Image 1 (cartoon, each protein chain N blue to C red):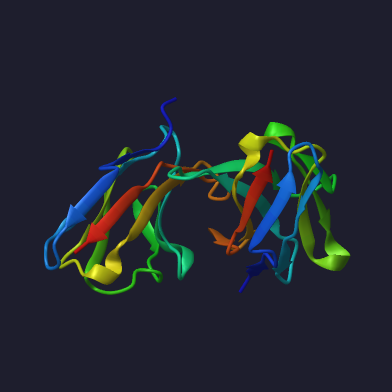
Image 2: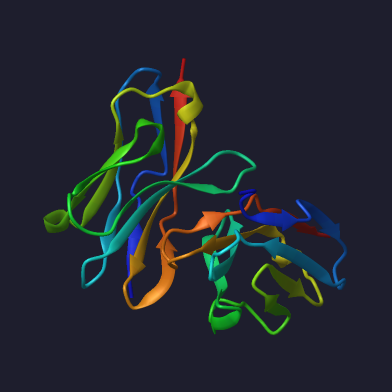
Length: 112
Length: 113
């Protein structure tokens, strides 16, 4: 299996622009998680899905952030409009149990 | 709610020396415990996990961890560290009631030649 795939690996954008991060989970995994990692706040869970349904989005920082999972093999995290404080590494992880999570390589987002 | 504390922000060891990284958790019931490793520019890789049973668990890359309920700890150990073990290590706890993990702040490991 190719593992969790994330794209793009790096994204540089200007403040106010829309950013879309993409994730393809491991085939057969029913859980998908979006995390954000920063030096100041560490690793934070933003939202997670089970069977394509959002279960807990309490970590989503603001209405500027939204996540979708239209099917079992694809999810997006969108930031609109982006702000410099959104600069971070965003990870997607998937799991068959919800506990053992397998992480993608991450997307490093820089908002100038 | 569960929480995880990794008291050591940075640890330096010589290659070939033994290693122990500390992890303390807070959770009312039996927790699910994990150790992950993150190399620079990479995602997190699962090293080992504890769900129940034998309190000493073996993982990949020669790592092991011991669950001690009385001390609320789940320390990671390796008898002989290799230069390639230099990375950041995260302890995480999961609750039975929710399919999500709470991560510690991480311990950065430096290995001296």
